[in-house]
Image (cartoon, rainbow, N blue to C red; front, top):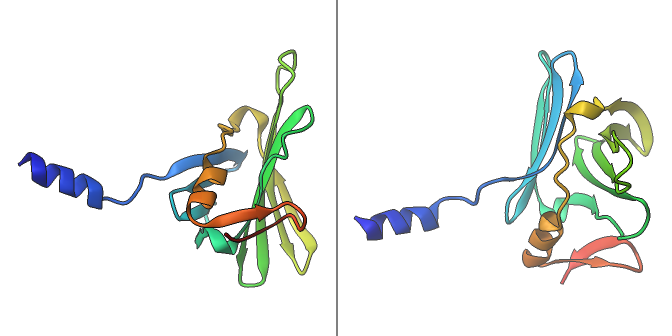
Length: 152
């Protein structure tokens, strides 16, 4: 019985790890998660929701460069000619009471179509290096010179 339970646990897909979530009001919210091989974007709206799951090779991820007062990152998902860029930031100054920011920018052909800014009190950005580490473990490396992801 224990052997069967262990085999089932090994066969189960990796749990999605939270990357970012927030609310915009009017029953709209966004969630970005990742596992060992993919990133998932989910925008929820009462009449028009969108979920995109992409392998790491198909996302545009900009990790925090490690400098500055704000920890910031962004991740982009392409779909049918549109790019959905989720951005997030945390002010590292302990004196700042509301130092979180984030939202979505929807663009087409490099032109911003719409920008939604999160309600600051709803932002969940548990910044860590887990997405960066997952991408590297999956064989993706950040080329510092071109600021793009390549196969290792």
